[in-house]
Image (cartoon, rainbow, N blue to C red; front, side, top):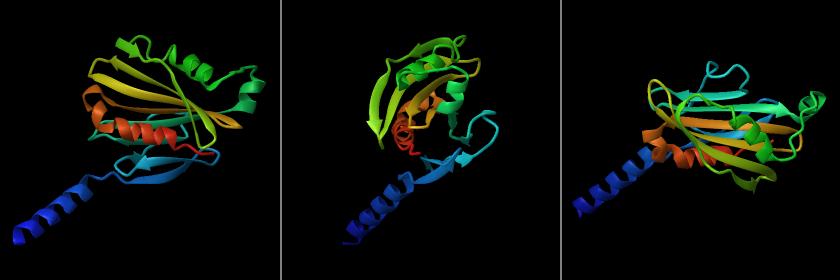
Length: 170
């Protein structure tokens, strides 16, 4: 009987130790995003990002860049869809990188918003990387949510990246 209790105790503690906890974070003009607790806020990844998180030891990064539709309109920039917004950004992003490969765009809706998403892999001088780039269109803004890690860690963080991207509310 002690063996069974010990096994149950060990299973429960192991499960809890590896379960990812997510917290809702606020950014920019009051949008929210679910962020896993293993990421810590930072301010050194991107000068225009309104939310930035990283975990250097896990080599996992997240930034959010928001664009006000009225500001884009005043600059005479018009994106008829979330996919157009995403492709406009991605077409030149890291274009010089070795082994740059881009997936087809996936479109979906969540929380009353339109999403377009693309996966990008590339190599720089240090390593190979996987990036999930998601564009979100709300009533007043376009957002770019960028999650990345080393390519060998993709499977470990992929579900978290998807959950983060789908969680944006404004």
